[in-house]
Length: 140
Length: 131
Image 1 (cartoon, each protein chain N blue to C red):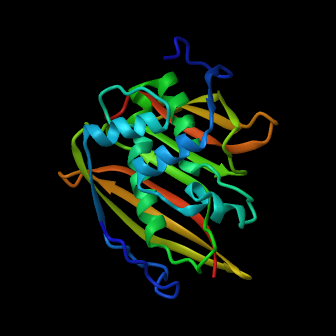
Image 2 (cartoon, one colour; image 1 turned 120 degrees about the vertical axis):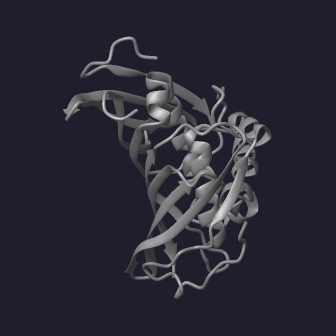
């Protein structure tokens, strides 16, 4: 967890390598067997030209970064808004980064407002968004 | 678990998909953690819960053969820690439907409840699909 929660603080980044095996595992775990993720011959005929990772797999990495930074405050008091800009493909290495934009006080509750992004090894943005974590105070 | 898609016309604003239930047992959580290459902390990762809800949507949304839907954006709010072994119910409804030429944007509202009917997660997903 972050030892110091303050405006401008960078969150510890997460790096993940995407493989077809991981995509298949995610399909099995989630039950989402959409052929664009798991059927290479189907996916080859689409505009993507091959399989792509589930957007929610990429977002799971963002949540891992947030959990690592904020612990249970994230899993029982977190909010996010994410845009899926590009697809991650087998062979890609994704780097997820984030930063605390500001600490906000509303009534007796403080919140950390963060931004995050997920980029591939070519620097292309895969996912971008904002997240808010309730830090303290108010109803627990 | 419902597995029958509805027609595109039926997907009007206010339409509610049949609710789907999932048991988030240790085997499910372990498989999910392996898939996302992560370690657990004794609770169900919030995105594992969302994964169930999103899979429910993707199974029920009608698509012409050979086409794909695009998950364009996602909003989520995590309201409660969910212990391993919890059974959840995912409720999904159509909040907005926007036609854009040969594509349509569906904005779906997700709500996830535990067995005590307490809401554990809510959110909105935007899905682009061919019509």
